[in-house]
Length: 145
Image (spheres, helix red, strand yellow):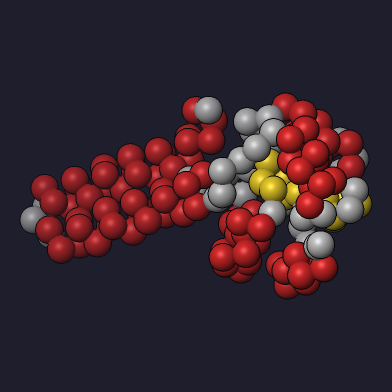
């Protein structure tokens, strides 16, 4: 669990140190701005912006029943964030698997990506697609039964 939070915590700590240094020098406005920017960066890089993750086994079981895609992701991945943000509200229609929390999910990703944990990897009808275009993923959602 701590691995997922390392980058957000480091961003917030660095922002706090920089803001404190600016505040000591008397530039309170700049200190506040730096702190806000780093806190926002920490939030964006945290798992908080993603839907609740499930295990790979459960996601694949649910996908077999409802036909919705399974997205394998990890916190801090800029391509995962791009997919999440560009999908907007439709992200809740997919099954999300955090490969840092689920070893079976990480193994599934390695199995289809030549041993690499390349994310996002989207499984649609049992077929893997590595780092697909968000518009293509949205189109797959409309085809799901």
